[in-house]
Amino acid sequence: MQPFFVTSGNVTADRRYEFAQQYFRRGDLDAAADVMAQAVELAPDFAAAWFALGEIHDARGQREQAITAFRKAREHDVEDRHGAALHLMRLGAEQMGAMPEAYVRTLFDQYAPEFNRALLETLNYRGPRIVRDAVREVLRAAGRSEQFRRAIDLGCGTGLAARAFARSAVEIIGYDLSPGMVGEARQTGLYDRLEVADMVKALQGEADGSADLIFSADAVVYLADLAPLFCEVARVLSSDGLFACTLETHEGDGVILGVGLRYQHNGVYLRQTLQDAGLRALHLAIISTRDESGVPVPGIVVVAMRAGPDTC
Image (tube, rainbow, N blue to C red; front, side, top):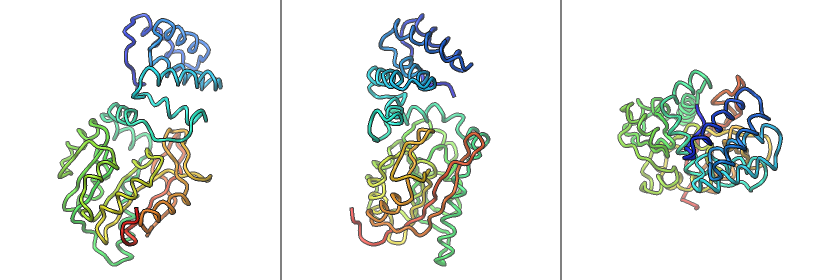
């Protein structure tokens, strides 16, 4: 996928940007840095070039120069569609915080047309099957049938996860932050309703106890703080409803931003946050939903239900 690009309005600066990207792709980092610096000199408010210069300096091991460039990128694109804030967090220049909403929307709008092919063919993606199998295991253990009156798919993407539950849910509602993804999901015909919305805000519009199943495959990884989401999940779930999701994890403490620019949540943090929201984990297992460079990315699948009255 090509980097997100908005023209500077200066033809020469845009050409310098393209030349620098070619050097970068070939691994000539010094030439890339020199030519990209020329681009921002010609167009000082060229956010795409500042961001690319940050990536180049980062690849060269020039941390301070990278930080300066990423800050310039964000300064000249206040929505931060490139995600400069994430790189600043990763470099330790800023504290862990929420992912810029415009970055997530832009990323997946760009990604939508090739999303399924990239996930299934390149990344060996298996998230929907893992979520479905975990839910089935919980239902079998409880002697319950695999039937749900109303299901909500959070971060629905192109509809891959909905396919896994299409035969067991009478009604499926889908939410995604990306209009491009919602457009792709609509073509599947699997959803009774689809809306463009942030996961937490989407659930805030749902009635208490209105869903028998809430599921999310590889979307919670874009949230740093899970408490607001889990509190809404606990409120919207019916008394015997299930919540199932996958996350990426790590062996350290709390929450970190991984090299893939997705949040990784420690298992202890996950259990505590579920408990604080009034949810009880029925199934929690270490799994991997995708590969990167041929290596499985460590993850967790969890299935939970309400432990009692809403505690948030």
